[in-house]
Image 1 (spheres, helix red, strand yellow):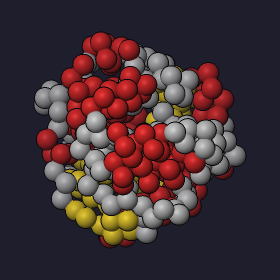
Image 2 (cartoon, one colour):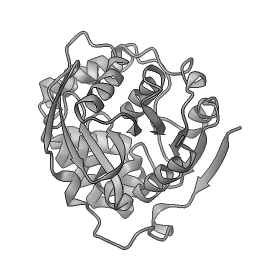
Image 3 (cartoon, helix red, strand yellow):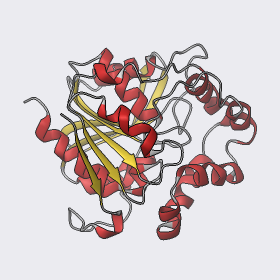
Image 4 (cartoon, rainbow, N blue to C red):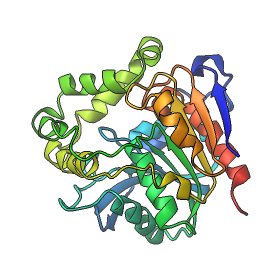
Length: 293
């Protein structure tokens, strides 16, 4: 049985923790470099408590989760990833298949001496999460899948590969990506978050990023057949204003995950961690209650 809910816009929700500023400086501190089969990953590993791996979308880095980390507060060990080819992480091998990113999560946990962890991923990160839950189910205590594309990507968006390589780190390209990903509501009510997203984009190596974009947007067979096989506690978060993954398209597939809770966030586009961090943090807390002891 799936539970489906609709959440209020972020601005209408009372904060779940005492206000500690809109940003969380702790998550900004990259402090580890960890070798994996998809390249050396740079991560921000902070806090003590329940471990959660946070994997961002394409065209972002660990900073996508700053506000989520701040809303979670104490009791969590947050492991925020710079995805391969973005931030300060190395590019992946050119022949990598999308499912292998999930193996890197397991390798990361080995290096950090963590047996099991929660996993939260946005867009590309959500795709990694599905593969992690299937390939390493004993290590996944629970999955939070946000704004996650389910359809195959076998070259339909291949034009983004050369675009990323040649202009991917420019503010002009960044603002175009922001317009496609971030909701009208967020752009109106929180313009500073758009600026932060664009700023992060201008910091990555476009050649490295284009390698990752190629692996994700030209080789993914999709998740449609995989979602019904997920056997770990799962929450699915959809954005009511997500133009890349519209609710009407994703909802039937979200319901196909056995026992998943499905929430639709009002005012949210394709980047839930920066658009509705309160909701993301709340869903992670609820996931704890459903995880095996």
